[in-house]
Image: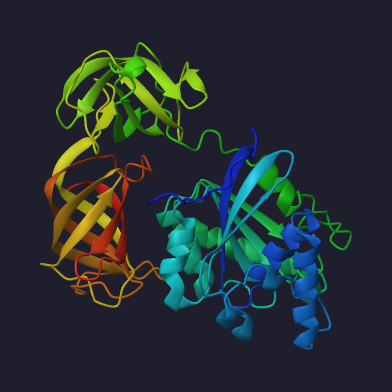
Length: 429
């Protein structure tokens, strides 16, 4: 899926971690993010004062930190999260982008959006209720979207007297469910977002818990190896031809590294043409580089004047992605008009657009029970299912399980020009 635009600049060299929150209604997602921001000293005093005033005006006997993320009027009135709220903060060790996703079933599409670019998914569970349907739903979607790290936060431990047995029973039940998912890294943390237990500081009320606080885990979870560094992929976005007399002969190809590592001297193949050349230089606004890796935006200079344009993909001569028009994809449908065979959609993949027709809906997936409904025939709002597409021209892609960047796409309605679905490519049909 498309990356989040408008990221804050000037964060220095601190490593970036994107994480998304998920959970059922009233599990305390927004309160947790508010507590995390407040205790990490990432909230301005005037913001905190405003939240305190609103809390008093509503008759609350505590400062409702959820108001720091529930920005829509409807969210504040109902005490729920509706849209995905993005928040940014930084510690000396890392910079963070938080996607606070809604918990309602009807906002599954928002949850998919929040997790599509996340390095870590944080699923909350109410300690009093334990694992519920939405917990399984969100965990499965995080697994489907190949989020590398999953953290189950058992919240509201203060309301069960910080009982260790309650926490461990929930962990055991979720661990059993997780065996059905593709989860590479699973962590359990008992917290109280309202009281601040194990959010930023270790809790004195849970001496039996020997693990890290949530912030400590977020700061130290290893993400450097999560991106695909094996398969070099560079999506061309723009051909750079300066008009100044001093650079009249300059030709570069601007884009983003979506996989692997590129260095001057590397042989590369341009797809879909199949022409081969050599990288002679890597340029940025700050000067030349000796290497480029995901997800850097750079300009590559090539030894030969080839016909290279927007939408082309650079790879290694003996390490090619798939090139084809017939596509298989898992699709999360995000609009009220159903996805049915014969429907035409516009597909946004890396830096190019193509038209495609829906050839077949193989099945609709029940994301709670993992049951495949092969008789569905269509996908409705918030449904997830396997779909065959036929594009008007070839796409250059990898399976989503191998590369989240080159394996994802967006389906756009040709009637309304709005985002209608998110696709995860599985391979050729």
